[in-house]
Length: 70
Image (cartoon, rainbow, N blue to C red; front, side):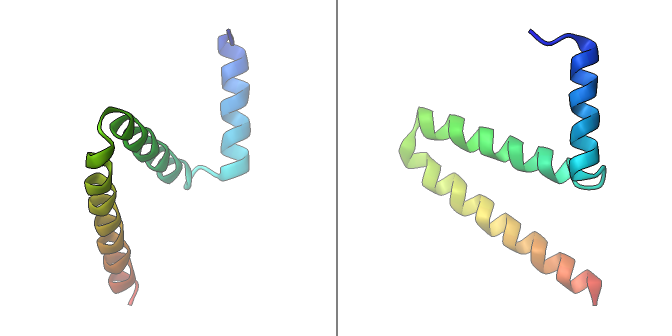
């Protein structure tokens, strides 16, 4: 098992590699991936519904970001 200093060093390396501004997006993507994996293991038919909803939500967010940039 990793000790606290080792975890802090790993966290520092991750911040340097990805940058502090991308960490929330990276965490969100990881969380969605884990959620989709768990739901697909429990009920494969429901996975399609969840993925469709997630794709639509992401598309709406990207559209709103483009509109706000103009």
